[in-house]
Length: 313
Image (cartoon, rainbow, N blue to C red; front, side, top):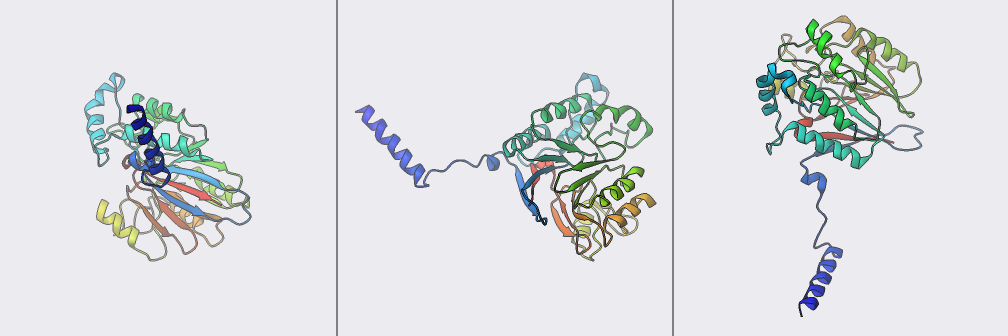
């Protein structure tokens, strides 16, 4: 009798599953990740190229090797929990698991993956990245090599930037990546500035005759007159001295040197091969047109489980 009942129940479960009354759990949803789908259509593309873009995970971990800033790191760790209370390191593991599952052509880490350049944090990120099989780009945000009060100081550059050189892929402030169907130019952030070599790198990819995807940690202020990005970031992060946003690059926001202004002007010029810009930094999702031709997508905060899945086709 018991065996017959078990068989009946087993058959019932199969029937319910096949008719849709019982479904498979959406693991991505259950993990708390919020993945935004984005596509870019390019002419004469023979196959899709898939990119996962993640920024602002703000990993804050510490052990006895950096014990002098343990309290600081602990406070930062608490700042970057998601709405369920999950720590940024746990969320980063989920994001890496998602990358492994998706098996993209490229993973792009758009800065502030590390919140503080502690040895434990650097090792953790390196160990997680060693799990993926796809190539990756890791460009710098404004936090990746900071260390408590050492924020873009000579000591930060001499002692803490070298800690992350094995996992960061940019050099001299930029990286050019040949994706076959297009070039990807990743630009490091040096406290609202681009490096001196970045302008020549941009001109180099412009001369190659392919579309260009630009990665910039700090989003660029649109030229179109659309103030939605300005207004949203001013409301969240405050206003700049010139009446713009404290967390954007642009004429009314943060344009701290001539080199950075020239790079932005070149990037947005009429003959620019740039087709799209990916950014992070502001911890909120936003999409806009920078100049009526080039679009910009800003990903939400990685520590909240947010990322972009980009299909270039």
